[in-house]
Length: 249
Image 1 (cartoon, rainbow, N blue to C red):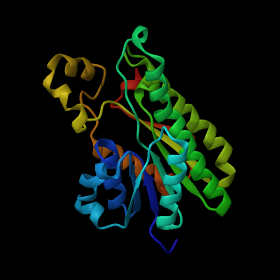
Image 2 (cartoon, rainbow, N blue to C red):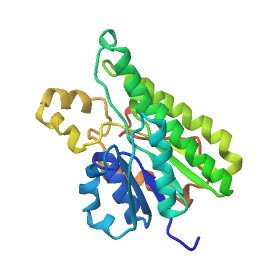
Image 3 (cartoon, rainbow, N blue to C red):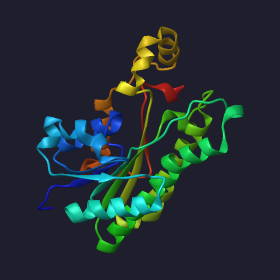
């Protein structure tokens, strides 16, 4: 390949999406970065590693099929080809099952699963039409693999994402499109900082992790880079747990 590899990262404005974008930039990728509003990407764009790469910013609302189609078209127009898709954007919900509303269910499932599916469909169609390889990495969660109270809807959506990974990997293996996922434990992004201010909640979560610590955003970024890279050429249909041993129980 005589051009830089390209990656589309959803939800790249903060937290994990930002860390993934930085990791890919350091690995030499040019980037199509999305968020629901492009203004949310300003902090990511200001990072010195991002500034060294060609970057296209795209508004993307995963609740809208028109937005998904337009965003992927804009990313392709910016680079010609997209080599890697990172389905990172998601919505969490902490709610007892008896209190969940249909609107909350639909919102989480649409963003976390339906949106990721149809964006992956756009990516797969493009790769198949051009007869070129591709790689998809989706951000799942240990909540999609183990049970925990209060997070049923979120966990079900991530379990669906893990199964989607298997299904797409099988269907697209002959087209050399690899599809994998990452299931992190709690990652200490700024949005999770409140945990540090609640010692009881923090201790309860750490007690489930054999290594006794949360994951870092940089560790998740490194996992994405690996799964997207030629080093993982024989890895597809796999969900990589980055969880300090939580799911080993």
